[in-house]
Image (cartoon, rainbow, N blue to C red; front, side, top):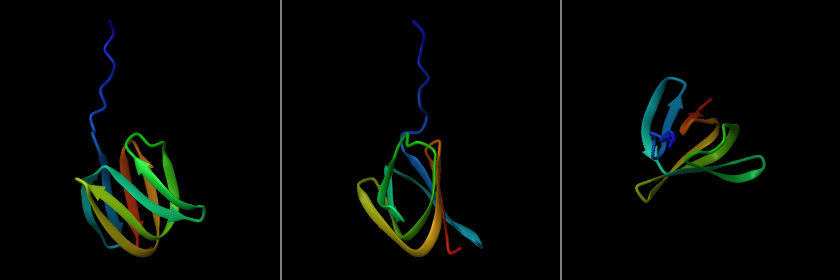
Length: 88
């Protein structure tokens, strides 16, 4: 019987980046924000995704929700890694 590959990451790796520095990188179970089409959520194994985002991002980590507020930004999701560029 052939073994199936095991996904190494159990959660999302979220990096918040400003033009002058990376603010932080954390592990999270989900990220939510808004774009021109409305609210959206990103969970583990989400399809590759890039979007202009506005107003805020909610990051859920160990059952605790943190809300980051900003004007506009760019969110990039690929291979369970999310990069949120704010202050641009």
